[in-house]
Amino acid sequence: MPRQVFEYDPPERFVAGTTGEPGSRTFFLQARGGGRRTTVQLEKQQVSVLAERVDELLDEVLRRSGGAAAVPAIAPGSVEDTEPLEAPIEREFQVGTMSLAWDGDAQRVVIECFEAGLDITDSEDLEDAAEEASGGVLRVSLTGAAARAFAKRAIAVVAAGRPPCPFCGLPLDPDGHICPRANGYRR
Image 1 (cartoon, rainbow, N blue to C red):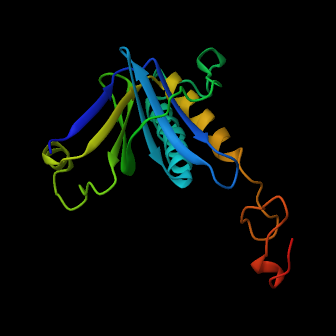
Image 2: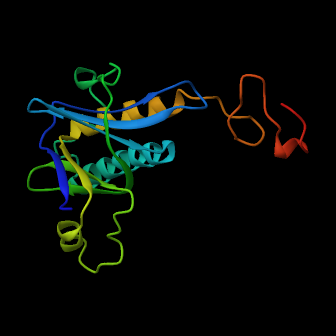
């Protein structure tokens, strides 16, 4: 089956969001533009790492450009998106590998999400491997401001789950948890 590419350059909207209750949430990325919408599922840790890396990438772009790049230091309120995911949520694929890059010519952050099971890491030329592979790919190009807003929201979405145990850092259930750092006592 040939590769299916869902490309948004730029999207009207690109957000991280969840469905379900804390402790059993399902995480998604959702892009919309040109009268279409694409939703992909991923793990909480993937959302967290992507948000952190987007912020780090933008900070590095600012540092290397001496502040001349069209990248805000913080997310502007004018592009903040606090709306829920758009329904119906129809998952295109489960995300496995992701890539993140800065397109200096277009002054954009490029995020690519590859379908789980799509192995492009063994190839010496990742671009050629991605072109030859089958499975889904979500490719989104964001301005610096939109990327900052995405990262801010994604960090907030991840943090909105169960609070961490102050001793071990594992998530606390509403009725506590058995804490390994407290010798198995319930916290």
